[in-house]
Length: 172
Image (cartoon, helix red, strand yellow):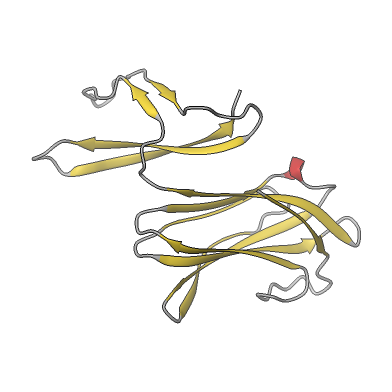
């Protein structure tokens, strides 16, 4: 998490490094990782409209890969990395309820490092069927926000990865 104060952008026009911007850069994000950033209305100091822009740099080429610009500060940007890259997330103060806004930016780099467990570890899925399972994420701090992912795959000689489900929330 990063907590910062950002001045209102009087022009309401996003420009990287321009008025009303805050940035955070992640370098050497590994291939296959999911990069995600979130803002939440309850984690700002008022009735602010903050937006997010996520850029990806590989070599000397920078591209915008995700934007989120709703009418509040509940915003999400994410991108699954296909090659090692540098990411920069920009917070833009489109409209604040005063001269500035205090906010907390939440960010994750999710890799397939297997920190949590699923029980049962494997099961046979049936189209239209249901399967219950339990996710255990280790020592989580109560009240902290977390991001996790469950992947679904078919063993060899099948096609491998079939799908993914992102799981977000606060630990209890």
